[in-house]
Length: 385
Ligand SMILES: [Fe+2]
Image 1: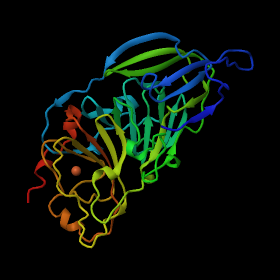
Image 2: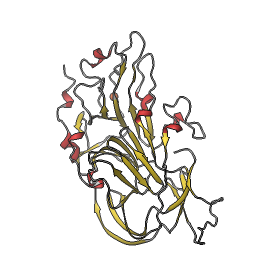
Image 3: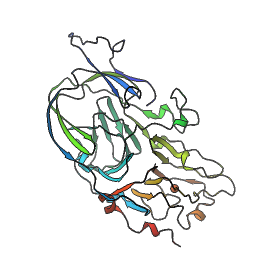
């Protein structure tokens, strides 16, 4: 996040001697996501963070692509995805391109006995159902329904759930995920016209620090392969850190929608940006208030972007027959718009309680085998009167 934060104990000056009471050195680590020019934090470990004792056989987690040139509007029944006990096994990629991977997950096990790190991608985890704690080597964040968890690449983490019924939408981004440029000034501060500000963003609240030796398994995802590395020391051994690179959460319920007298375009719902895709939040809000306004959106050509909408809750104004956990895909190359009757229905309505997350990608998405299992197969005909 573009604001400075610090947790735990750090030395007065960076890159200088920092010892504990017994005279043992702390080990400094620069933790960034884009070379030496992007966001970074300086971490202070009890042990060297490089002590690998074994590397187990890696295994492929490359998704099976079923359709790599899709022009069919699709509707996926996301909640039909079967749950799996293990968190990593439960992650099922459905839509993929070279910028982003969109994954659904329904993990059932409350805790896992390994740590996990994504070496390629920042992860955005939207919590549709579930509650628990994101534990990381930079501190812990409690999460619940409606939270976006933003986990920069390289963060070592565990997700712990309170119950076995959990539904997650995971967006893996091969470029860093930021808040939209146009809402930030040149110093990074979120401006007055932004639909949220720094007060709505929650960084890690407590630092868990263990001085432990043993065998610690970190699963590292790199280039669609899962590597298993055994470390000699507990990965959560950071006594303090400061900087700009850390995981955080933002609740979709804290997104203050921008409304107008007439229909506002989708960018007003934008919440995050990354290279070649954006994430938007459709939240409960007042409808347009011009006496002749049409609250439903107009047909739009999206010739150059693919639109993925994950329906979270409420009645989605422009669609017929969509329910919680459904995901629509409106591919690039052909226009889409409200369903028959939706435009007429919207006229005179004062407000909506819809809640949805949209991912718009500027490159076409490929569909996985897992996606086609959830596809209703008939959505493309749903505009015919
Ligand atoms: Fe659209």
